[in-house]
Length: 190
Image (tube, rainbow, N blue to C red; front, side, top):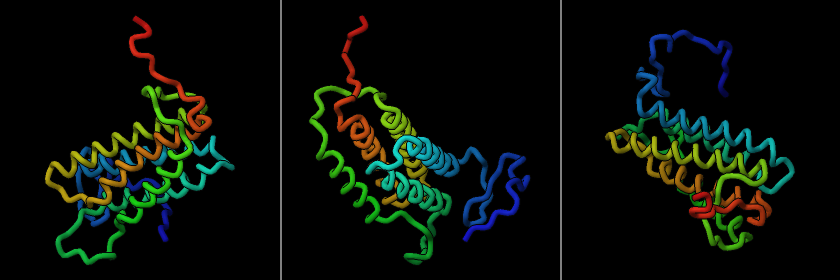
């Protein structure tokens, strides 16, 4: 259980913050940017859920919000070579697999795409498209972190890739199973 009695600590006033392992880093550190983008994705899902209460999507989104906190903890805790499995909260391959199952289940009810989809439609779909784009940014941040030579768990990176795919399909699902999708009309405004 986490207990927060005081919200401000003043420790970040000089542009630094602490990782979960106690290491102090700059607030501009790639790791901090990565879990910050994950946090922003989670906030977007909170907005989406204002439009999904009582739908099949809402329990999925509620679980995703919890998993995004787990992902933030994963990213905030650099892996150590001697880390024993199960001693640190990490995203698991089973969580990625569950995203794929849900993605396939939602996608099975949608008509095949014949054009690119523009972000929009119902309020839920528009908010899901926003969450999708923020999740893609989070994924790019995690890739940059890994490319910098810092440890990133492979399931964490895969999770973000599947998450953005799931959010795209969920947006189409929220658009009346694709009936209310807004389609791109190439060159229509020339």
